[in-house]
Image 1 (cartoon, one colour):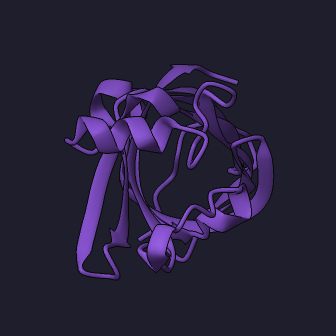
Image 2 (cartoon, one colour):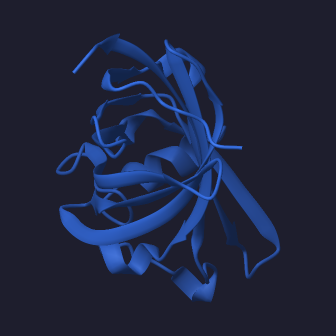
Length: 172
C-alpha cells in the first residue's frame, strides 16, 4: 500500500508526539526509561515527494521519574544542558519507500557534536491534514561525548523511540 503525503509545510504537534529514550544500566540489570516533554519540529514535503525538516528536543525536559537521576543526566557527565540545551535532528532527506516505510537521512546534534544518522520510520497514518511517523533506533552515546560509565555500569547503545505527529500548515 502506498500512501500519498500532501506537499506543503508541516508543523509537529507536540501534544500528540513523544520521544523516549531507554538504556540498560546497573550492569544490564535495569532498563532506565525517560521521555522528553519538550519536543518541537517542522518540515516540508516537496513536490517530488521528498521531505526535509528539523526535530528539536529540550534537554531539560527529560523526565525519567527520578529527580536525582534527571539532574545527573542534565549535568556535564551526560547531556550538559547548561551549555547544550537542545538536541536536534536535521532531516536532510526523507523518502517514502516500500509502502509505508520512510527512509530518513539526517544529522543528529547532541552536546555540540554532530553525527550523520539514517533511520527508518513507519508512516502509520496520513491524510490531507495530518501524518504520523513511528521510529525506533539506537545511538552510541559515547559518540556524542557522553562516556560517563562509573564502575562499568552503563554499556551498550541507547534506544530512541519516537511517535511524531505533524499537521499541515500551508501548501508549498
